[in-house]
Length: 118
Image (cartoon, rainbow, N blue to C red; front, side):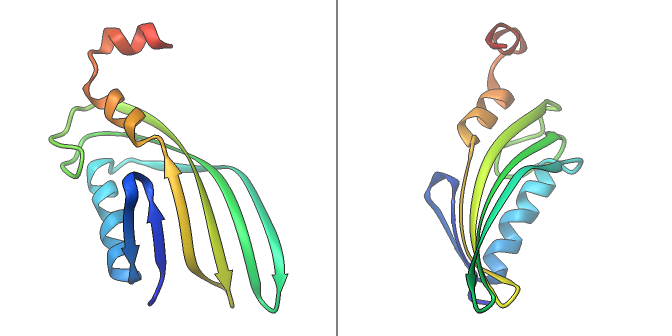
């Protein structure tokens, strides 16, 4: 209930309600989104406490409304890294950074510009 998340673009989320709202907004914008765990590291701090580092990729199509404006129909790929503190089997704090600026570029640049950037 007192989960704290330090997210991309200096967003600070506190509690399950904030976290759920943030995730649901992204799912609304990218309803077919798939998250891939590219790599996972963890350190056992003892007494049921862990620290994690997760490298991940999200792939999805912008077909829903949400924080990124009206649907563009564009398929996007976003890379990110998330660090967690886990206590007694529960995530208690998170630091997450991902290519939100890159996501916005994928949604707004003309397709020809994206092709040239590859």
